[in-house]
Image (cartoon, rainbow, N blue to C red; front, side):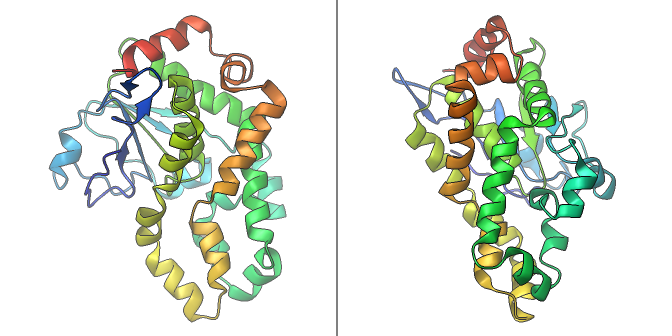
Length: 267
């Protein structure tokens, strides 16, 4: 999967070219994923401008959007699809909205150790990934993403969160499974973002570890792990029996919309 050398968007990738069953592949230039777009400058990133992005789907929370608003490419429409909208205040108070608080969660090594040490960080992320499948706001958000992708005038679509790894990673996994990628391929694509994410957040990681923070906590929070994706896949299979029923019954996408997505995105 191509990764773009973009200076104003972190972790920008094209799902195009990923192998699907039946000797087919994802059509290039239509399905793009990334981190936040608050610094997007097409003039400084000719490769980004050349993508012709027509639709942007923002998976972030209201707080994230207000703190760092998207800079949407000229002519593109913006769709807000807040994966973590359900009980946001309660989750924040409980400390379990980690995917939406990457900066603050590692601000104090002692507090991080108390709440995230001894394997608790990985456990917390696994719980978040299960919620990506089961929560009402997540189902609504991912349904909105797929509905946009099914629209005739969708054009090249970019979906993103903050780091482009968790909420975005599950979105990519669902789309690829729906298009016919096998689980091994989906898992490889999911894990492939690790170098870009760690590079983008290297200053935060360095500050945390220099102040005495446990590198294992930083790695669990700022990376992606196979266990996280497994948690979401297991929740999907438990609740729906597979991706087809999840997309139809959980995300509310009718069969004709799925057919349009496949017709457009499979080369």
